Each structure stands twice: as structure tokens, then as C-alpha cells.
Image (cartoon, rainbow, N blue to C red; front, side):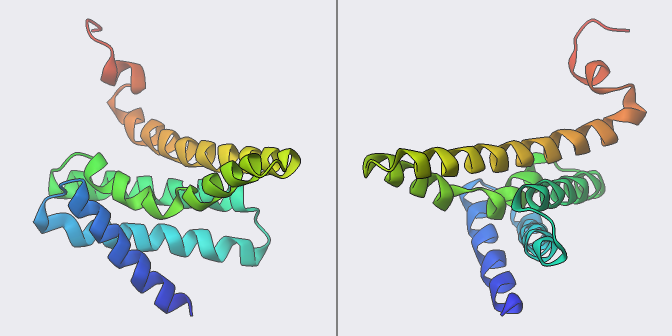
Length: 150
């Protein structure tokens, strides 16, 4: 069953890569990064991790692989990191949050909304942590993005 999920995640990630104009020579690599992030996201709850922790770990793994491969293939990191996190985006959970509010079930809507925000925050945290790790040798994040520093 997990193999079928990984296949469809790969196809969906490649399709999103096409939408984001990922270069053809690295399009399939983005698909593998997306499938890898889904694999991490799917396996960690089996070992007792919460969905939020699994999302953060999968995002971190996706971003770390993206940084390494972007340097190797000499493309921007976002070429790999955006398609890599697409499988983790809580789109259906956001839909069900809005549906609960529209139907008047405010407690369920609030619960789902908090979970959605935590999951989105976990994606962002994984991406930022990987950026911090890979920017460390370059003098830190501030050195990389601030102008006029010497």
C-alpha cells in the first residue's frame, strides 16, 4: 500500500514541479524528494510520533536533501524544496476546517484550524532549520541576506 502511495506522490510532485517551471533535467529529482518527504511523514507516526513532529521531520529531510542537491546540480534551493514539501501541505485539513465553520461546528473548526496551523508551522520550521544549518558555514543567515555587512 505504501508503495502505491509513494508512486502517486511522486507523480503529483512532478506535476507540481511542472506547474512551478522546474527545469526538465531536475524535475524527476524533485519528485523523488517529494516521495521521500511523504515516506518520512508516513513512517514516523507508526513509531509513535505525532503528525506535527512527523511533518517537521519530513520538512527538514526534504529541505536538507534540497540544499545538498541544489549545490550539486547548481540550481536554486527552491527548485527542489518547493516540490519537496508539496505532499506535506495540509490542504484537505484546511478545507475541513472551513467546512466545519460554515456548518456551524465551531469547536471542531477551531480544533482543525489549530492542527492546520501547527502543521503549516512545522513545515516552515523544518525549512528554516535546514537553512540555518546550511548557512552556518557561510557566516550565518544574516551574513547571507543583509546588505552592507562586511
